[in-house]
Amino acid sequence: MCVFCVRAFPARGVRLYLTLQKYQGIFLKTVTETVPYVSFHGMWKDILKKTRIGDGKTAPRLHDLRHTFACNHLLRAYRENRDIDEAVYTLSVYLGHTVIAGTYWYLSATPELLEQCTKRVEKKLLKRRGGES
Image (tube, one colour):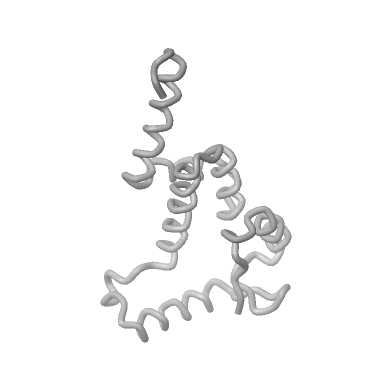
C-alpha cells in the first residue's frame, strides 16, 4: 500500500487525487487499485491494538486523521500567509467535498485556526482604516 505525499507536491497531489477519484480511494495497493475503506478500517484497528493506543472506547478514529490533516493544512496556510481561499479550495479537493462550504467549516474547528483567522481579519480591517498593520 502507498499514500502519495500531498504536502511535498501539493499541485501534483491535487492532479493525482482528481485522477484517482474515479478509483474512489486515496490509499492504494497499486497505481489503479485502492484499499477499500472496510479493509483500511480493519488495518487501522489492528495498528491501534498492536501499538496499544487508546482503550477501544477512546482510541483515535480514522476520521480523526482527516480532521487533523484539514486543520493543520489550514493552520499552515495562515502561518505562511498564503491565500486562504486557495488553501480552502485545495483542501476541498483533497477531502472530496462537492460543496466548498463544508470545507470552510474547518476555519473555526480549532481555537488555533479561529485565532489565526481573527488576526488576519483584524489586520485587514486596520489596514483599511489607515491604522498600523
